[in-house]
Length: 409
Image 1: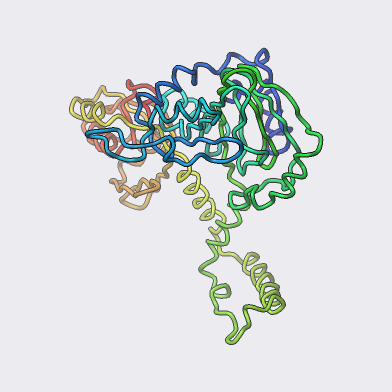
Image 2: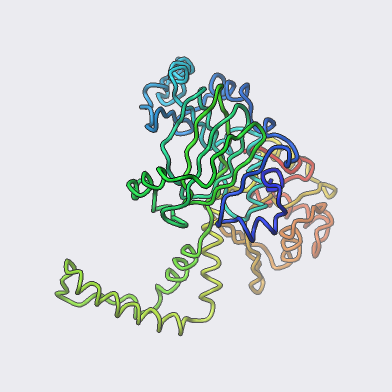
């Protein structure tokens, strides 16, 4: 994914641009355009035929969101849910200058599902994708910043972008631009650091916090915004603090009768707490860092999804399973194999599965990612290997290797 979006090598991007500064890349320096990911025809198909529902769609005009009742409604007999796109209403709003935003395309549109999965692999952070379809000579949103990094990929049409330096560097998810509206408006009135027109196939990387606004030129513009919700140092700090809940020094009640409405008194309490926290951190029990690491892994897994399984094809594979059936680990499924005496456990984000200790070597080999025939799983005879593979297929831990790497949403 990364090589499709930037012309510099990955190491240079990581050292010089990631989280630091914008990067504009022209189509001639990239492998190919982005119309394989989305197209005007695909947008029409999503609106007219795919049953898109809110919140997978928004519309905006002149910096403000359009009320959802102006573009959604029921879909008739058998589809009475009131939050489905009404294509005629969308046409009316779009023809009158409203930008159409298709959200969560990494859950809806197969080419983008695969693209985003590759992006997670390349970047190591959660990724999502939205599409912005703007009528000719219109803009969708006022100058603002995002609380996540973005790759802007121009699919079709042309769009004029202005980029300004941050008023607040590296904002977290709870620190939106609207909290600094006056500073954003003032900065947007200054000279931009980038003032350019994106043509089809161009790409623009923006770290979180960089101000931006855009206007379509001359014809309908379609661009993808690939958002990256970076795991931050603050996430690590929170994970460590959560691990310290076992420290009695941090669980005590505040003094009886403390005036918690007094800034000075609360500040004094906070200062003492910082000193206590420093002592607790210095004497943190063994395993604190490892357990905090597990928490970060869970955070990552909650913000991403493993490659989907195909239920019907998997059931057929289970029914036809024999020693020659090749299985492989479900791509991006986060798990840990833990040996414990006569048992071995497979710790997934939502459950733990226990097996006899004889399965440990086979589980570790599969977890390493190598496709293996059920009858050739290490540490097991052919019959036991078939039994283990059958259970792992049913548990959606492994998938049949012949279904291919991409299995849908």
